[in-house]
Structure formats: structure tokens, C-alpha cells
Image 1: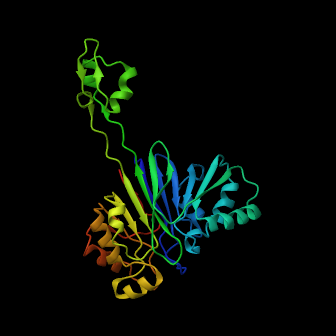
Image 2: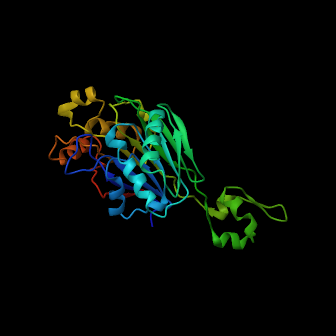
Image 3: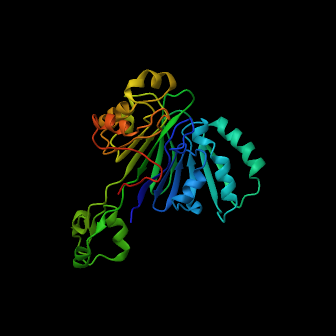
Length: 304
């Protein structure tokens, strides 16, 4: 069973389309749900994909354009009708905190859970951390304040070799330290290295979510190697001038960034509704970065 998976709720752009929902993505990390952007209808899309509301505790907003955040009032109202308790933290910019607090107080003032706002800024910063992951922001260039999010697992514990710990009679009380990489010292002073008693840890997973922005080559160094890069691809190269003027990128530019940062895979999305054949996005990207994926509602990608 996957411990780190991506679920696409919506991959359209600002102009409504019958083919796509507005932007929203959910990461399922060890049965904790993290939502990135919340376009209209996100609560319905969660239900279609059988993602449990009770496990959603964090929502990260890249910016405050309607196709990325106007689903919040509906989602908050829906959650109020469920048995969800605890706390829901919304990570957003200061104007969003003021705006959504008024909306929630009017439409959703009776809630069985608490809402906490975490103010973010268009800068590089650590905005969330728990015992398993960190979430960092990177500033983007759009028409308003905008950030990308980088989700990264912390280093995992090494795996115990049962045959070796039994042979060296390692007590249970020492197992945690050994998995952390510390040696085991026997009663006679013999030092047994952790590498002898354990197998290497599973690799940590790293995911970057970049939407909306013009092409920023400098992001490659800031993002670094990732298992999966989502990068908006609103336009094809034939409309590169429109992309620049409106604060967006092309599929080719997304592919160049994926190549330059050392991503394993690239996920396209945020398609302009002007295009009827979205396979053209994939074709354009794969000419530069073969491991590109065409996004669609209902898509699930297991990263482990």
C-alpha cells in the first residue's frame, strides 16, 4: 500500500470548462491528506475519489485567484456537516485570511472543528513540519503574490536485520538507536556498526508543486531533484507570448525545468480551455523531457 500518493481533483485553468475542474490536488502521506489549492467543486471531487474528509487537516493555497481558492467556502460548509473534528489549518496570504475569515464566519460559523490560518509570504520559507515531512515555499512570478510548495519526507529509519540483531543479542531497548544509525556496544566493549545490524532506509520522497508562474529557470536550483514535479502548462509554445503576458508557462518550459532540476517525472496541468486536444501538451513536453505525464481528474500517482 502506498504511503505517498497524489490525487488530482482539478487541472483546468481560470476559464470554466466542461472537460476539467478548477485547480486542486490532494497528497495522501501516510493517511494524512494535504490539499494544494481548492478550486470550485473540490469537495465533490474528494468524494468521487473516496478521499476521507476526516483526514484532511491542511490546505495550502498557492495564490488568491478564484480558480485556486473559491472552492473553500463549499468545502468548509461540507466539512461542517460531517463528523470531522480537530483542527483545519489553511496556509495562505494575509489578504486571504481576512477575506475567508469573514466568509466562514457568515456561512460556516457553526463547525465541529477549528480553523487556524497560517500566514505565508512570497518568499522561501519553511511553512509546515511534522515528524514525517517538511513543506517549504518558493516564490513564483505571476500577476499577484504566488508561491510553489515543496513537500519532502524526512530521512527514514533503517531496517532491522533480524538475523544479525539476534546473533549479537541486541536488546529491544536499543533497536530505535540502531535504526537511527547508532552503533551497538556489547558488554565486552565490542562495537557493532549499525550498517551490520540494519539494511538501508527507504529513500525519502520529494514532490514540488509549481502553479501559476512564468518560466523561471532559476527554480531548478531551488527545487532540486524531485520524484515528481507538477508544473503548470497553461499554453503551448505557439502562444508563448500570451503565457508571458499573463503570468503562465508553456508545456515546453515546464519540461525544461523538469530536465534542469533533475526530476524523475513531470506532471502537466492547468490547461487553457482554448485547446481541444490536450495530447499536444504531452507531445510538446516529451520532446524535451520524455517522462512527462498528462494530468486529468481522477489521476492517482503512487510515489513510493
